[in-house]
Length: 308
Image 1 (cartoon, rainbow, N blue to C red):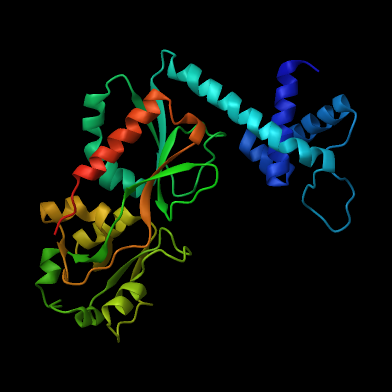
Image 2 (cartoon, one colour):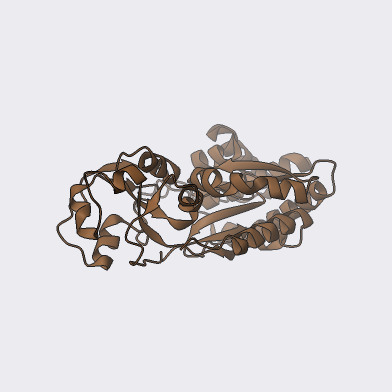
């Protein structure tokens, strides 16, 4: 078996074992399931041993054989080393592209308003922003660094806390002083609530119900209102006067500073159990371009003191 086919077959085998499916492996590798199956069969033929159990009654998922299971950790470690080698080659190549994954809302409300400062400080680094709400595979999608919102634990990634944040109600100045007369938290019963459902299903994601419970407010129906799956769009709806948003302080800072939004009930403090983290593969930590962008992010976060 020629070496390129050998490497492709090993990658097809590893992805199939990890996903327990030829179809899922094919989607990751951007080939057809039939091609993945053929690569795995060619590897089995070359090795002279099966890699998956066939004909297992009642099981639709792929089950590696015992010898395949023992080999997988070494194969994965080898792919990680190969990926790091490619990263180092790219680091010293003519291309200065750094691929960064962030959520669409974080890009719009925090990163992009500040990115000119990074480009001025590091003019030789070109950023490629991958904006997605879904976690990505850093190796398969060749991502260098990301900013994620959560508890700080993502398998296979190093995580450095970037920012904590508060959560509090905000609305347009006109709505705050209009007929609704939002003077105390109980007045929210008369307002339209704007719900951020971008991380719906995450047990620790702050909700209106959690904020109202912490504030000791009863009688507000949190089942009603407008639900939006993008944090930036939630704030935009509030700016346009469509209701009261439960804002995340990192996202809303510039809108408060400009007067587009006002914070309601500032005496009530609710710190989110989730935070923002800079994440990357631990083996890539010393790559200069990655380290430069990570350090810039941390410095920007430290300089952006929260508004009172």
